[in-house]
Image 1 (cartoon, rainbow, N blue to C red):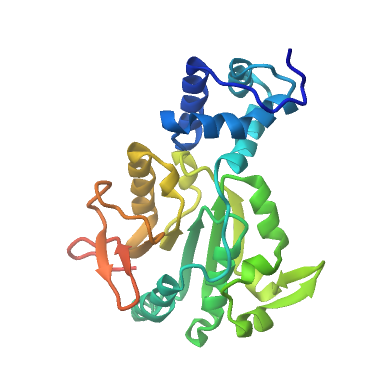
Image 2: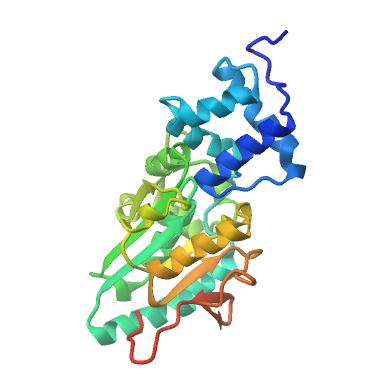
Length: 291
């Protein structure tokens, strides 16, 4: 007998395939057979919450219920890890601030262009886009520029946290005290990001597997997508990376996580070897202006 407080609901073979494939079609997240227990364990509480007794019933809920879109959005929180903090992967951020930015600024100045657009894809609770904003504010050469940093995530919950902009000590585990003192003030038992940082960043919900939404983003000079494509299978990775390539301006850069690469995914990007890190650049065709 099942009680609706029970969170130990089992998933049979057919249910696993149905639920797994539906999640994949929605988000690109892929769960292999050996991940069945993880999927079962993380989703069982959702069945209890909706007073459903089997995963087959839950599959129909995800397919046909009036609240299916909200539920699919909600379960992204329990199926992915949103672990992040300010100034994560410092070597890559040094490449960004000390090598990539000066190159982009130089090229844009030569064209009379004083705009810069950066996308943080899979921004989670906002530490990454705010880190980028703080680094840009350290650049006096960018004073007066039209700067836009777009943070997107599939989860409304983490975006709410990002928009609030208040963080606990765990988010500052590698943050230099000068940045903490310059760009935060204490509030609500935590530290609130300064308005001048917030003013450079906008947040929006975006499913990276929904190609139609990419059209609304416009062109970008730099895309950060760190520790996101690890959740995708090879086909989904190709699909998402192709969209990044289309979104980037010629000469723009794609920054992935330290454990991620485009090997066996695409040859469209050029791997650039900087002093601090290796990043991917969208090459330009002969006669085509960079950035």
